[in-house]
Structure formats: structure tokens, C-alpha cells
Image 1 (tube, chains in turn cyan, brown):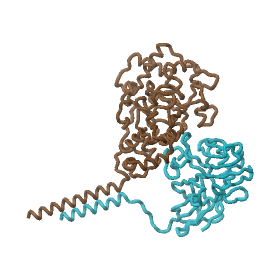
Image 2 (cartoon, chains in turn cyan, purple):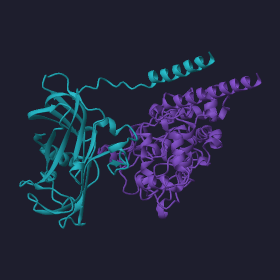
Image 3 (cartoon, one colour):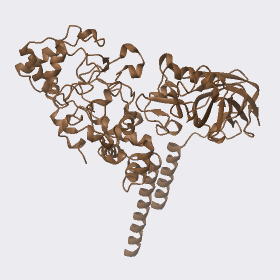
Image 4 (cartoon, chains in turn brown, green):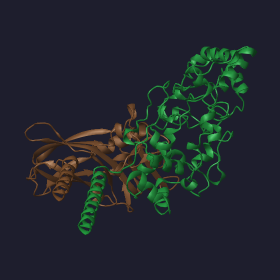
Length: 253
Length: 346
């Protein structure tokens, strides 16, 4: 009898723990799938491959540049479904694109509801809320060299390197700012030329092309300005010129 | 008989032990850590704080870790400077009565170290308000080459290899892995708990004591001449104003953050809590006595910059009013806070 009572007590405790701790794991049929987004870095009008630590000539400025760092934030990715319903919004959608490698330039969309998608919305930069929300984690952690200590906010685009045109021999552009007229945030929507098909089987790859040379479309050469480390008009125009030129290329399986 | 009784008792004991262990396991499985949340007692005569502890609940382990970090020079590049170096409890958590603080390699800062009390009511941090959140505030002094000259990654590496810190972080946050967020959360738990609300002024406001005639008269002088910006009970309205202290060196003040030329030379209105102990005064510590400050406000007009309209006619006080005002300002000294062991070097 006692044995039975203890047994029941244990069963009850274990049982109740399943109820209280249970995560809601929805149906496990293939209703979700993954995709990747790749940002392919190209340089100048000829669209040669952009790589760090190699000499590049800026065609408009006719100045030689060797990048040691090229990073930028991408956030708040949304997908528009073919049926025209609500956009799918990726939760915790923050990515730091880093030109060190293709892998670091690829972001992953996990658990996208299965279906056909026709458009994508991307916010270039980190939304203003996360700029005012204290210590963050992951790619938003303040120890990645992408957060200003003296003027709280993210460095949305970071380009550093060396150049014989610069009087110091180097250049550093830390472009950011999330407030008012100098906010360096840009939301862009791209219409796909074919459907992005999420089926839970294949992982389609959406390729975009960016062009760091575009930072200087409108900006003065490195002989005049080789440093920008604060929000302001220049940060806005340089980042804007860069973002505006990022183009959708293709969807591949 | 005896034998069967004994074995039955042993069986019950074993079963109870098993049930007990199961319950502990189950309880611990349902929560990330089993720390007791410490409720921060907020003064009843203060407004609701700005900083929200709901993302970073104070626990005694987190608070103690934050305190240890606050007092540990490991946060600086060469382990010579701790937060305490420039924010000493005996000085109301301001520096030791110097205009500029000494940092890494003997380098001097460029602004006077502010008292770090009542931070959870601050809408911004630093003299120019450049920092927008309590949690990221310490990154400024930690990384400034004239202050601690360290990096967050450098600190994380040192703490991770430290004999004690990994287990202290584990106790506070449930894992030995140290991240910048946990580091900053812990410091925020400690710094955010430092509340100055037990001065003689606070006792008077709460009806616990009566002001002397001089203090009461000084209180009236204060209300008429100072309280528009130094708004009680925090004794600041957190706005940025130019009070005619023309910057002596390359120093744009608030303009550096807003890029608005109209903000040139503006600095945050500082709290007056513990003002008796936090000298020297102003953004650059140019005045060592409150008498000098009152002299300044008598006529703060200058041709070199715009002065806030509220000060356009200066603050002219009689000798008696000055004496009374100074007496009142001393009622803002929070003696219980200055000697509270809870915040002292461990």
C-alpha cells in the first residue's frame, strides 16, 4: 500500500513537471523550412571580387585602397508570401555581415513557414530600439567593436584599411547613428524575379550583391577625408549610397 | 518483527529521499537559476525609476558580483584603476576632490567625475548625455584610453581565466561562460542599487525631522533660485544647459552628441545630492568651493557663448541668503549611504 502511494506521488510529480515545463512543440510535419541569404561583395563598375587585404583601385577617386575590415549590420528581415497575407517576420533578426569570408557574409533564415515568397524586406543597420536597450548579446554584444561607448549606438557600417592617398596611410569609417535626420537606417524591399520556395526539403539561397566602392559615390577622396567615427551627415550619405546600391541577384537551390 | 520494522523504515526513508531528490531536480529544471530575486527598496518620495530591472532582476549573487567588479582594478588594462578609483563612497561616489581623474598610465581625464548615485532615475549618462542606458554606461570609462584603457574582450578573457570569477558568474547567471552582457548586468545591479534618499532633507520631507530656521530659510532660497533646474527629489531635471562655464579646452559639450550648434557648451544639470562632498564643481571641476559656485551664478553672462535664459539675470543673493542656502545644501548629505557597508569595498 505504502509502496503504491509513493509510486503514485512520484508519478504525479514527474507528470506535473511535464505540464509545467513543456515547450509548445507544434506539429512536426514539414510546414517549415530554411533558406540562406548571401551578400556577395563586388568592387567598382567592373564588379571584380572584393576581398580584404588586397589592393583595389577606386575607379571614381582613382585611389588605391586595401581593406582590412568591412562589416555591416542587417536586421528585421521579412518575407512577403505569394498569397498576399501577412509578411513573415523573422524573430531576433540581427546579422553582422563580415567580408572576412563567404560564411560570415551568409545569414540563415530558420523555420520559415513553408510556402512561396515573392518579396523580401531588409533593414540595413540596427533598428533604433536596440540602440537604446542596454547590453545585448550575440551579434549585438557591445564587445564586437561595433558599439560606440561615448555616444551609445551601433556602428552600422565599418570600413577600415590602408591607402597611400590618406595622409596617415590608413582610413577608418565607422558609420552609424540612429536618431533624427542623420539616422543611418535604411529599409529596402526587393521583389524576387522568381518565387522563394520554402518546402522544408531544400535550402534555397538568395544572393544579393553589395559594392563597398559605393561608399565613396559622392564622398570626397581619402586625401581629404580618411576618418569618420561619429554620426552625422557624412555617415548618413556614405552609408546611404552603399545601402541603396545593394541589389538582389538570384535565388538558387 | 524487529527486522521487518527496520527494513520497512529503511524503505520509507529511501523512498522519501528519492522523492525529495526528484523534487529538487524538477524544481531546478523549471528555472534557469534558483537565485532569490532581491527587491530594491525604492524611496516612497521618489518618482518611478527609468531603468527597468525586469530584464536584469537583482539577486544577491548578481549584486555581490557587481560590487566585486566595481572594486576590482582587473577592469583596467594594467590592473591599477577600478570604478572606485574615481567613484568613492566617502565622496558620495564621486572622485577624491580632484578636477580631473587620473587614469591608465597617469593620464588625466577631461571632465569631472560625476557622483554615481540614483542612476536608475537618469535619462542619460555622462556630462554630455552621450550614453543612453545604465547597462552600457561602464563601457565609456572601461575603454577610454585616459581612464581604464581596456577592452570588453580583454576583461572577459581575464575574468574567464580568473580563479574565482567563473563560479561567481555561474552563481549569479547560471553559467560559467562570461559575456559582456553578464558583466554589464552585474555592474548595473550594483550601481543601480546605490540610492541616495536618506539625507536630512529626505527626513524633513518625510516628516521625520524639522529643519532649523536657517535650513528652512535656505530651503526657501533654494526653491526660489535653484529648484527650476535642480528639481527635487533628484535635484536635477536631467536637461542640458549652458550656465556660462565657457569650456577652457576643446570641448563642445552636448553639441558633440546632438551635432546641434545651439548645444555648444551645454552640459547636463548635475544632481546636488551630497554636494558638500563632491567638490570641485562644474563639468571641468573649475570651482573648489560652493561659495565660488554662488559667485559664478551671480553673473554668468559671457560674450563667448549663449547662456541659458533662466540665468540671464544671474542669481543675486544677499549675504544672509547665501549663508542660509549653503546651510540647506548641507542637508543633502546622505550620511547613512556614505557609511553603508552594503556598498563598501568587499
